[in-house]
Length: 171
Image: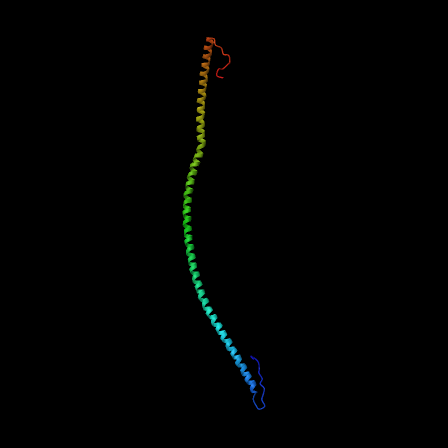
């Protein structure tokens, strides 16, 4: 009926047909009831949406609070972890510096020892040369003595009439 133009039938004697008017009013009444029902449904739906909005706002506030708390906890944890890492870094760095100093000292000792090796070998070579010369001298003396003993033995053997047959009894 909405937007509809209604024409009532006219009566013979002035006015409109009563039944048409009653039907029209009844139709308007039904339409009004439908609008009222739709309005009530819309109001209930709007009320439900309002309540949902309020609940969502509450949930949002709670979520923001939890997120803020979480953020604070995470930042506090991160700061604590960072401080621990920094402390560990300092400790490790100090240990590395001490170890580095020890290694440098050991390298200096090794460098000095390696530098001394040629000098030590040269000195040992000189000592071995002197020892070798003494041994050679002693060997010559011993050989000379042995030759002298052999010559004396040959002379004694010849005077006794013993001749060398070439057979060595030790062989």
